Image (cartoon, rainbow, N blue to C red; front, side, top):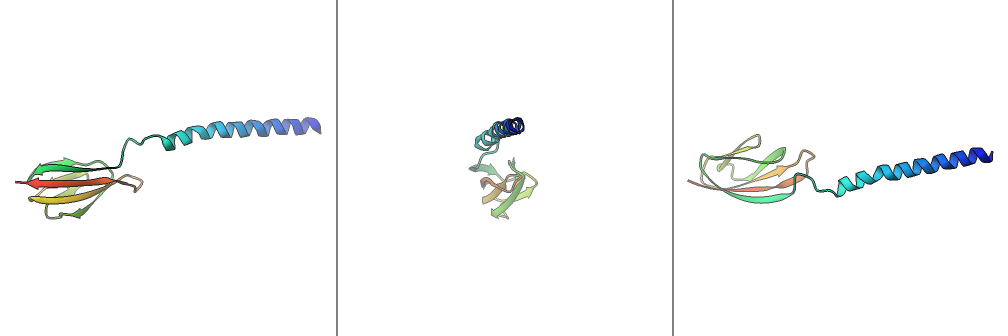
Length: 103
C-alpha cells in the first residue's frame, strides 16, 4: 500500500510540475507585445491618392464623402477630413486613421 501511495504521489508531483512548466510559456505570450499595436495616426493625402491600412475590419466614423473604403484600401475622393476606425481579427480596436485630404 505504501509503494502504491508513493508512486501515486510521485506521479501527481510530476504532473503538477509538468503543468506548471507548461503554463509558463502561455504567461510569457500574454505579456509579450503583439506585432499589431494600438495606434492613432493622422495622414495628409491628396484627392485621388490611396492608403493601405493595417487591420482586418474598418468603419468610417465620419467623412463618407471624403474617403471610400475597398477592403484595407482607403481612396481619397474629396477634400476634407475623415476618420476610419481599424480593428484586429479578434475584434479588438487597432486604432483610428485620420485622413486630411487636400486637392
